[in-house]
Amino acid sequence: MKIVYRSDWGAQPPRGKFRALNPRKVQGIVLHHSGVMNPPKGVAAVKAYEAYHLSKPAYTAIAYGWLVDEEGVIYEGRPIGMQTGATRGWNSRTESICYTGFGGRDVPPAALQSIKDLVAHIQKRYDNNLWVKPHRDLGQTTCPGDVLSNWLVGGMEIDGDVPLSLDTSDRLAELAKEVARRPLSRKRRSRGEAVRAVQKRLKERGHDPGKIDGVMGKLTAYRTRRFQRQMGYLKIDGRVGIRTWSALFDA
Ligand SMILES: [Zn+2]
Image (cartoon, rainbow, N blue to C red; front, side, top):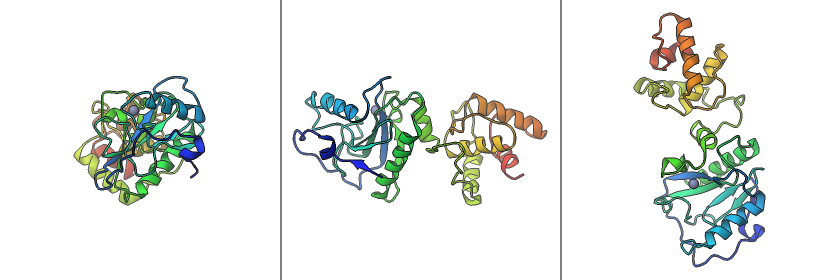
């Protein structure tokens, strides 16, 4: 993983001292985006953020810990291990990444790959104990857009055809327990690894739910109903409880 450090992109000196994060207090990684449709690209985007943040007295420097541009180039926003100013109310407890493109429409695979690599890189410093969330889960905002948010909570797959690491019987057994406790449904807006596994399995069994995005949307619920009807003995409700799950995976 290649990082363009502050000295490489020509960062301004910070206005005051950076404050170090207390690693024991850090709980997660928050993902942001530019929020505008046609933002500047590459280093220009990073510098635009810096100029904007420095124009406000509250900021010491560019607000983000890390930035990833549309080509997947990774930039150091604040020096490693320092508190950022990106997520109101959470800055002493989170690391932050900003995608400099617009996360509400398709994000290039190179950018997704870099975000994923960067998350792994950050996690390494915390023994893989951090949660990873879209900004919108922590505040009144749509940031970082539907596409990027769904990708993140859906398990950060780069391509639906990439083999899922969860395809081991152990992992599936764990997910089955989750599903038994809490069935997957569109109404509940279920999302995550279990939904992704269901989508993949539906597709394998001839009920293509479209994009494997880890979100229990309209098409996934519809294909689930089709599968339930085909099986003959399942309740046809478009939800995945343990009976439908077992029918999908135990065959
Ligand atoms: Zn944000």
